[in-house]
Length: 134
Length: 172
Picture 1 (cartoon, each protein chain N blue to C red):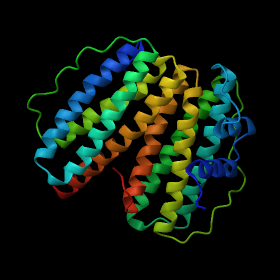
Picture 2: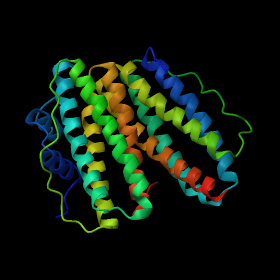
Picture 3: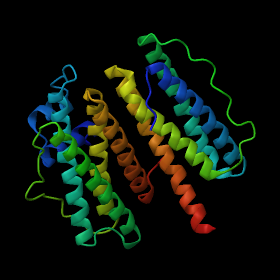
């Protein structure tokens, strides 16, 4: 379990993991037409969540995060790896809450956690269906 | 007029027996003051009360075979999650010297027919729990309980998403 020391650490971890999920989701989506609606929904939530984190960064006087490390350039279209990356993103939100030290920031990231956990379940359901069909 | 999400969550919390102080937090009548052991216990007790309610509903449904047979495994899994949430929170409360609330002697569940209608009832309890955790989580002051509540919230969302999909509702 990650033990974040500060809000800056939490935001940096989230940004890096978002980048990985986006790359992996893009790769999975290239092989599956049915993923496009989900990917569009994830992208919309991502943009809103980033905007809200920017607001929190200003509120908490946290410096702008360095550019997120690029995701895997050629992420394989691998549902299990997408699931693992999404789970890591969910866990970063959960494990990051105690490091925020601000009730409004906890409230906001907890709401993001709810959206991300729902996305994780969708991926889980795909994975279960894929394994059942294998 | 259809019941708002907030009103629904409050109705379930009242039916589950959530104590007045935590009800005040949920209704927005009371502010969670500075994070304190006392506030954490109030939130813990409210969350536990909802967990007891959810466990009772799943047991009621499983005992009477109200979940469709193909979904029974999910119902058993989710009941297990709620039992785990209950035990974790009882342990946290007792560690802090609190006397956690026990389950009610009797729960009045709507006389719902078996099948999708009962799944919808389970979904509603899960939604109420998720909204209550979401509303209360920013008032939690201690690291271990905040982490525990966050991971419980993840489980509640999983339950909601699975039931929504089963019922053909939008999940993204």
